[in-house]
Length: 414
Image 1 (cartoon, rainbow, N blue to C red):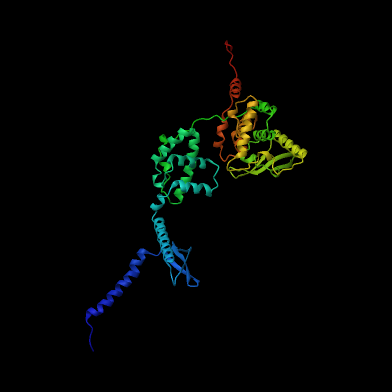
Image 2: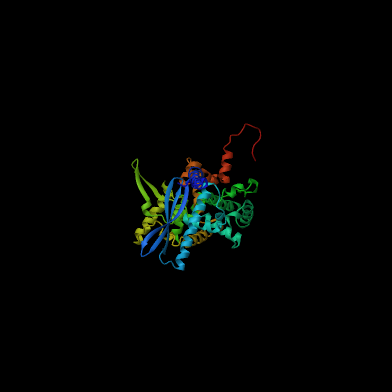
């Protein structure tokens, strides 16, 4: 028998050795905690559909790519589709690696903040709030140029802040910045950026809020307005109703009769409003003041006399175009003319002043009108939003000072 040379025996043993080493040493180092495989699903007629078989952190799922090709006779278009499927596979692998290692995907940082912010606003239905105004100013500041997330630095924020203060009041600028800070927090959650760049701006470089005075009408002023005819009487009714309920325009214009509820409490009929606030989406259950009830009764009588029933309490102020706000603009124009006819400064009249009027008059005239109560009546989520109404008129300040007792002295006033 012919004996094999040692070399011919060592070769297969060495191959087996390294195979075993690979299984027990190399693979545990790699560990299959992550994997993305491109799979094929047969559809019939020689066609296949691509999908990804993804395994990550002991969880498996599938992502169907909606990419179909003819496998038996692939055309140039089919080859391009397969190439695209492989690109998606590589992209998903990269995303998982980035996620596992706490890294930021550089490609995401190159994305345009303006485009992302537009989608952020649309997805959350924030079309009519300060987010939209902030976006408009960002676009104007950029003058049509893209704004990659990587360029959204503290230096950019400071420059944008100076631009805003030159265009709007400091307080409005702060409100826009606050909305952008919230949006950027979402970008952090999505792994686009590591930290919120707004938090990196030193306090000394941030826009400072200035004290503001919210114009409101006293009860005497409201009496003058009530006695003054308005071109469209229903506009006047809606405004005065808001003065005695504190409702926003967005809550008054769609107010339905079905949201006015009558309940018997201690043998007495009480009126309440039960509705969802447009701005906060909170369900409110609020008592209605006597003056507001009189306006509701007046509206009911007018509808009954005219023979024209409506689902809405104030059908003439129901917004017809929520995007362009055509009705709101028309109502505000007529309210200014009404204020002018009453002898007031028309520049200070707008529908939202009714809300300021309600809050101020509650604080000044009700013994139970503390900030906490007013906050609940206005539907504020925090009392800090109500503190802007803490300013009181000079007449009340004088009355408070005069209430101090006097000392027995030889001096007299005047």
